[in-house]
Image (tube, rainbow, N blue to C red):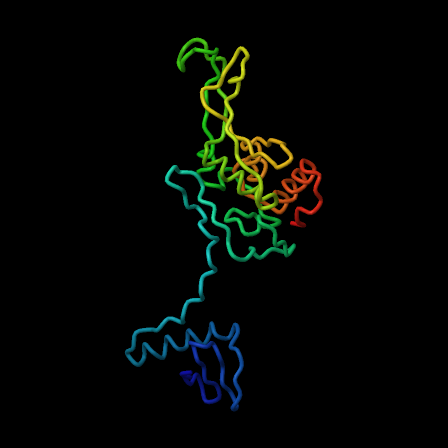
Amino acid sequence: MAYVRINSAVEYDPASNLIRQDGQTRPAGLAALGFSTILDVQQQLRGEAPQPAPAAAAAPAPPAHGQLTASGAPLIQLATTPAANPWEYTGPAARNPYYITPGTVMQEGLVPGYENWFETTPVLQPGATAGSSSVAYTMRVPTEEGAQEALRLVQEYVPEATVEATVFGAGGGPWCAGKPSYYVVLPSGSRLNAAALLDSYYNHGQGVTALSDLVLRDELRWQTGRSDLGNA
């Protein structure tokens, strides 16, 4: 420690933010603001350049917050420890880079690249081509990358879950989609729409909350008939 004498009774160490007075040391607290000013004046009178107090360490940013994959979709890398929150919630959502702590207002577009987990496909008459007059409508479907994120969410609770690609109308009917849609398939045979999973969990791109985990867990409990899927 390098104490600097402020007056006849007080010495101050700007590095440790401690006061030494009457042979005892204690944190300077708010007094440090005044002591720092005094130190600056003393340094200038001695012809020295003012030495700023060491900056406080910045709080670590959430892992991969705002980072994107090569396709422009969100890069989701869970933190090793849950984000601090007043509920002391420790489920998977609390380790997600887009976790919204209680009391924080959700905002549109909080998850950059969210819509790049999806694409649109024309729904056509069988044998028709895109751009023809036979396009009935367009359908929003997840990309394969989006489907993998939906699968990751489910596998937090049901590791045996898999992804399946199907083409709407491929089995017959008046209409057929031009691209596949993806479903998360549970061991029970239940199929969950990957696009709906993503929209529910990420609140349409506005972030994730503890409720994201609870809704997903309860849906999986209902679909599988299992009550041992965690207490997140």
